Amino acid sequence: MSKYANAEWQGTGKEGKGTLTTETKYLDNTPFTYATRFGEAKDGTNPEELVAAAHAGCFSMKLSFVLNEAGFTPEKIETKCEITLANGAISKSHLTVNAKIPGISKDKFDECAKNAKENCPISKSLNTNIDISMDASLSE
Image (cartoon, rainbow, N blue to C red; front, side):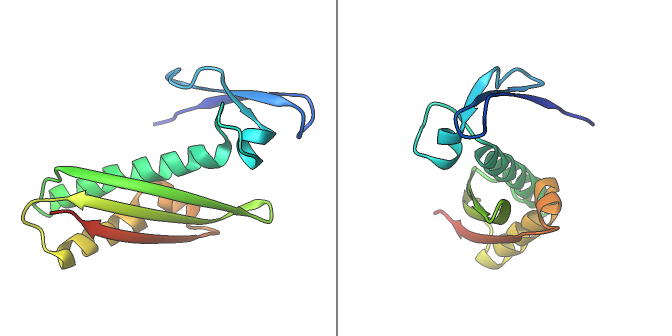
C-alpha cells in the first residue's frame, strides 16, 4: 500500500503560506502557515497536528484489532495524541486513550493497549527517535 499527500509553500518561512492536499482530497488545499504551526491561529493546520491525528487514528484502529484478536469488541475507543516539537524535532508523542469494552479486565486492557502502542505502524515509525508514552483508562 502506498498513500500520498502534497504540500505547496509560497514565500518565506515566517510570512509565507502553504496548502496541503491528500490523495483522497479530504484535505484539499488546506491552509497552513507559521501562525497555524507556531502561533495561535486556528484557520488552518500544521504538520505536527497531522502527525498527532495519524498517531491517534492508527493507534485506535490497531487497539481495535488487538482487542478483537483477544476476543473483545470495543464499544468506543477515544484517543488523544499530543505531539511535542522541541529543538526543531518531534521529541515526544503522548497517547491518552479511554475505551469502553464490555467484559474486559483492566489488566487485559492494559496488555492490549501496550501491544497497540508498540505495534501500530505510526508508533513504529516514530519510535526510532522519540519517546512514546500513554495513559489508558476504561469507561464503565
